[in-house]
Length: 93
Image (cartoon, rainbow, N blue to C red; front, top):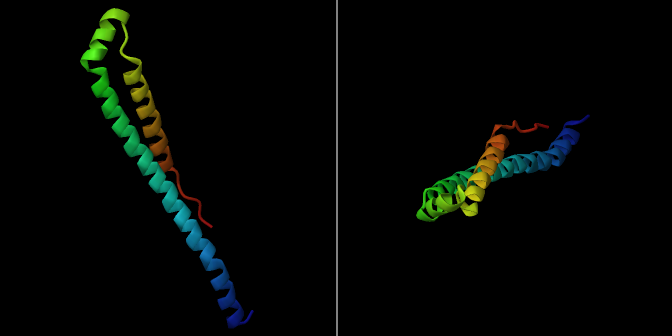
């Protein structure tokens, strides 16, 4: 193959590689957002679990409010998804 032909192949392949790197960056940023959102939900869930309304609910029903439980469950799920997304290795071409 001539030098001109190799240059044409490089110009053809290079945009795909740049697009692939953007996809990896996008996936990592989504994972970071999931992790941050999960931590935020955990903080709000812990605050709701320790609130006076949850204390009253625990007194009468034996369990905390549904809102606090769902925030804790959602926070754990989002955090786990974010950590899994960050720990995965990116595919290389």
